[in-house]
Length: 246
Image (cartoon, rainbow, N blue to C red; front, side, top):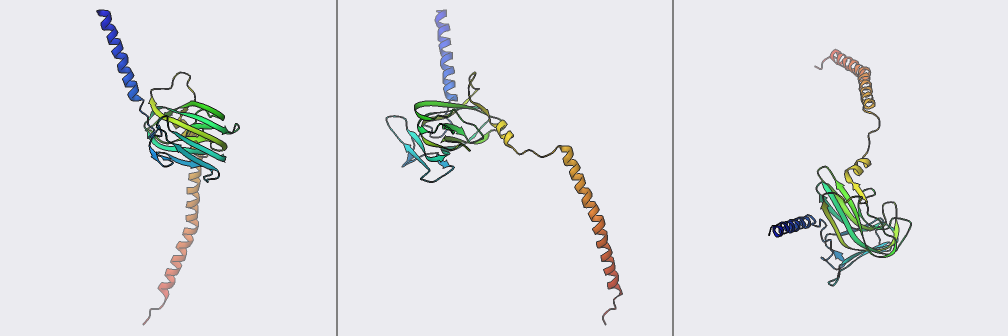
C-alpha cells in the first residue's frame, strides 16, 4: 500500500510538471502554424526583400487542411528575401525554431534560415535541395525586454542568395535556459551594445576640448565685445552732441 501511494505521488508530480512545462511552451509567434490568412497572405506576417521587385523576389502562402501549411520565399535573383513578424518580448531566454526545406539554394552565400533582424542572429542556414529539417536558435533578451523582428529568409545582410525555401511550424517559446552545449546562442543586449556608436576620445580629452572652447569664446568676447562697447559709446556721445530740432 505504501509503495502504491509513493508511486501515485511521483506520477502526479511528473504529470503536474509536464502540464506546467506545456503551459510555459506557449508560442509567442502569432499564426506560427500559418493556418490563418486569405488569398496569398498569412495573417500576422509581412514580406520584405533587399530587392523588392517581382522579377527578383516572390513569396507564396500554401494553406492545407490535411497537412501543415507552408510559407515560401523564392529569390529569383541574388537577394535577401523574407517573411517577417515584429514582436515585443520581456527579458529572458527564448528558443526559436522552424521546419525548412529548400530547392536550389546557392551554396556560397547565406542560405535558408530563421533569423532575428540583428547583426548575425540566425539559425544554421540550409543550402541546396533538401527535405524537411528543423533549425533552431537560442536568444537571450536582457534589460526590460526588447522589440525584435523574426524572419524566415533566404540570404542575409550583405550575403545575397538565390533559390527557394519553404517554412512550416514556426515557434518562439520562453525557456529557463538553453540545453547544455546548445548552439547557436545569442545575447541580444551584448550584440546591440557592440553595434552602438562609441564616443571618440577619453573623458579627459573631452573635458580639455570643452575648456578650450570656453576659453576661445571668452577671448572672442573680450576682443570683439570691447570693440562693440567702444563703438556704442562713441555713437552715444555723437548723438548727445547733435543740436536738438526746434
